[in-house]
Image 1 (cartoon, rainbow, N blue to C red):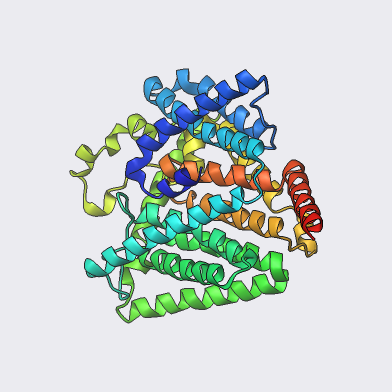
Image 2: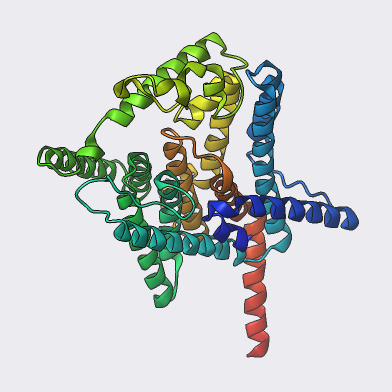
Length: 407
């Protein structure tokens, strides 16, 4: 699990990672069969996740390209397999430090990726003046880098809070600085908005509405500063609305099609848009004026789900996020709980919030990014479960008893 957390930051390794996970799932199922124990770990995501999986496969026959939609559905099922495999491993191991070690591995992987991105950014001539050159991940682009950083930053922050040793705190501070710099120089506004959502939720958890208003005021000043800078010749491309216009165009087309096929959609998968609307293919767009060209995709995971498999699929998909966040950031957290488990769960919850916001502007629920999401979901559900808390308490009691015998 630690190796998968680290390797997920290198998308070119995804195929090997996927095959290894399938092998590990088969081995775990075989061990459970030999030991005559159920591999099923009940969790709050079971109902929405299986509703989504079943509904999407039922809509495949109505797709524009059923073979493509079925292949995309199988990819999602394989990604969900990472979630259930991770839950099983965490449940059977019952090692108190394993969830935190996985989170450490995730932060280390994100930090190494941030270092690579910053070095390449400087080497390519990137500058703070504008985003004509943007930081990018290894084997991926700035969109992937931005999404990785959205997930890594809150985890590093939560580990900083719960770390006891000075060297551990120093490493987390360094990770925060490097991943934050990589996020800034990715110049990806969707990623920045993900951090805005995380900052507002963190302010609400720590200080309530006053802190939220303070964060909003600070963000308003930052936004105004960018606008003023653009009028002075700095960050003009960052402030430009051309990519916003592209998204509004495809969202309008997609929403119109959703209203026509509200129950079954046109086919699950990001490429179903271009399969349905072939007039927006690359070959035909080169014949259009530059200002009329669009990138032929929905640029929104949630709208892609609604367009592909209908509103029932969208509701189930949203339910997955809501059920997960209710487990990670419950209302009692607002009453002042600040134990180690709660802090780690809140960090994972903030990563989930940022990931969801990031997917409002691009389709990023895929490949190794999806593996990271499901791995974080499994860790979060495990550490907040009563069974793990009980095992942790028993482990602490055994340690105390052993020290007493030694004394």
